[in-house]
Length: 315
Image (cartoon, rainbow, N blue to C red):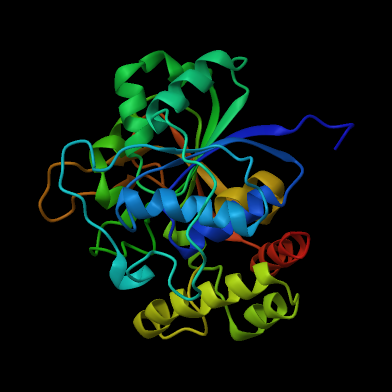
């Protein structure tokens, strides 16, 4: 990487097995400089998400990575969690030791603000794998960070696939629609990995076996996570394997050619009892509203899993 400039990223996340695999993918990729990882409450409460980030960093042998705890609840609502998918710890499927690397004393929201303001303008990419609470609070406190962010690549939302918590809403947006609205209204360049694309990244038995065949402690952890995590969606959708959501955010940074989508207007529903958390994505451009997000719909799934196998093999 000496002849290329690394892309500076902040990962904001709520691990979750798929979040943990996304973190591993980022840490295994020399193209990326992980400035820090911020925890948010989501799949499980904050006390567990910040621990799970540190467990994952230690699994990768990357104890120098700085980890910060951010928001422990959505901006305006009660926390909704997903132990029914991820298990009681958020990383069920394999037991990892309690982390010994430190949690930074600075709050994650403050870290996001400080880093974006100190780094050169348009040099930091935010990678959000969970609810957008930390970013929403940061935007509310210091709105000028929006114009300094290179782009925000996120997993969240759904259009053609509907929702996975309600018929209308995907989990990350449903947990904190108010924060999501702030993000989509901010003017930050946004790239969205919705259920429409992540549902094409199925952890089939053959793909899991390729990861298992790597034969390392990391690959053993990843296969354990996948086999636990996929059971819920296999039962739900009747598929061979479940969708692997969050690593798509990191894979896009590494190989954007794996994806295709459309630049559209996306708005967030925050008031309707029936559709709260819905990503109202104007994919067919029936409204004359400003385009504020690239909404991905197509994925080279084999290329995506080949990338994961390649990088996990290097940890």
